[in-house]
Image (cartoon, rainbow, N blue to C red; front, side, top):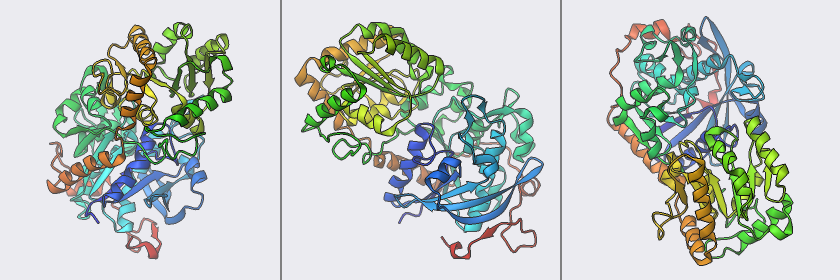
Length: 530
């Protein structure tokens, strides 16, 4: 067993709570790290959807008092295990987390108390570890909802001997989502005044939670090598490119993996027929079954099938798709789109679908079974994202011999080898300029290649041979964890440190149950030494 103890702190984890790729990463990476010997555990809010998935989560800690602003939030922590044996700690506070959506509703937007919700989540980490008597080597933090943990560690927890040798790694899944709140929310964090500065959380007068992760974490990672470079530019930096440039020596891009057991055409029970690179006959069965299920006319079913599985958003390239949709409908192709999102985009797609019912089908829902069936059945997968930190569907597609046409950005560029440039090594088609014309040109080129049966099958076999397992990515994370531990938190930025007295002034000075200043926490005695 490794000497590394890692606490994943995340607002999402598949299959329990998911809005995007972050959940897939946090749902799979801990299991891969555990296989490499890490003692890795997960801390997650106990949302309503998590309660539905894990109704039997056991009470672990009760009545913890977490200071937030001028009051103390009373929270509880439950415990469960994943199918891969990972321990999950769940922060329970129904007032904050028993809701229909994770961060806000489609009709009303973000929840007004999101700052308070995730300040509470971040501050609960210290009493959780203290009461468990389990102190991580590294806190692995994910996105803005957990970024304040690095600030609390920097200004407060480092004065606790149990935490003084811990380090922090912050992973940026999408820099566009930063957790921006009015500046007067800063007082609720209980961080010292110097943290609200241009070298801290302050961002044009606002309180930027994600910036705390960028400034105060020991190391930073993104979910692909190219994205780690892109976010250091004005085009993709969203105003934080200067901060990232200053920390470039502590910034790495590690391409996400995928769950190769779940996404495996040889064993996938969600598709009508299994297949492999050596026997692709099952893929033809999958295509015929899907076209029949969706109601495509029988006389059109020999056409190439193009698939899209995506959130309907401009960021995902739907502005390009809508520009070329009429022209696509004039080609001998079929197109199926699975996803929900922007209502105007959905309206335009459905309008075109009604005009061309024999060419285009829209499935306006998130349906895991349908996602697997599209990946297995399609000949070509379209992913023209304006930007894409990593992307997973292009990897799923490659694994199923469904050749992707992608915009050369972020993880799409890192995971797809362009057939146009490397005809003997290519696994897909990439367009450089973000224009409708460039996108359409690559689709036409892919359709030309699909007509060359033997050459197309060679591309499919190369695609299916790619290794996108989490083991590869987990080994890269292990290197960073060990560097943090070995070098004694070497990446700590040079900001003025709070004194030990500041710890008492600003933090909750947590003490275990039984102490004269007991804050009301309790621990099941059978779990004192997990």
